[in-house]
Length: 314
Image (cartoon, rainbow, N blue to C red; front, side, top):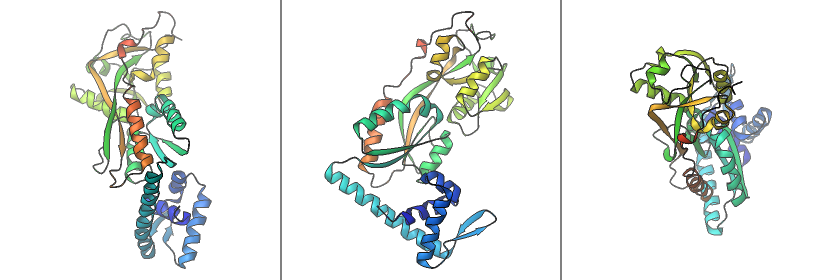
């Protein structure tokens, strides 16, 4: 409801990038630039200094930003108050999710949420856990669903469910017949890792450190940001990997991968992060409650994984 130019200006000021602001707002960069230019023409002064591909705030820009924050906060509070009064849950909801959650858990949950609240316009951003938490922290996103606790003290973290990680390998791998493996067993093998910034990478690195293995000493063959790429590399017997048990059920059933439990068990909490604002909208409260309830049903029993039938590997 607030002036669109003000919303665009605020996002550019927070991101200090027209390109990043365009991504956050789901707009084209020329459209973002046009909105800011209109606001500058309205005030008859420059709000940003542009130099060598970088932007910075002018004194006038800093002044306008202070007022813009107050105006947008008041607008959000007004809309939330009216929503409380009328009992409506409506409006845009900016959601961020790590890749595991976005690919394997969130689609069904979002579909059910949309069925219950058809007036909500949900927009999903997929990134690694670190990036999602950062975007929630700078208010680019309303809420984030991540694979590791956030280290941002300004965010509220709500544990939603437990997720178990397992070692995966090719059916022809030397460790495929083991009933369990430990950190030392994996350290002796070629290893396929997630990229830095991934929630899975952080949890797995802590697992190795806690059991006497320096992650820097692993025989890392490659670092990949895609789970499908990691599974493909492991299927090709390029190394072993550690992944969420819930993401490899299909491959286990097809016999293209083997999942071996870790000793001791490695579990993590999938968490929801959001800013602890004094006043939260009815929409955000409804989403937090809905997702928390649904995630309580997501705990995955690793013993349900079936071992492959010999000879079925690709």
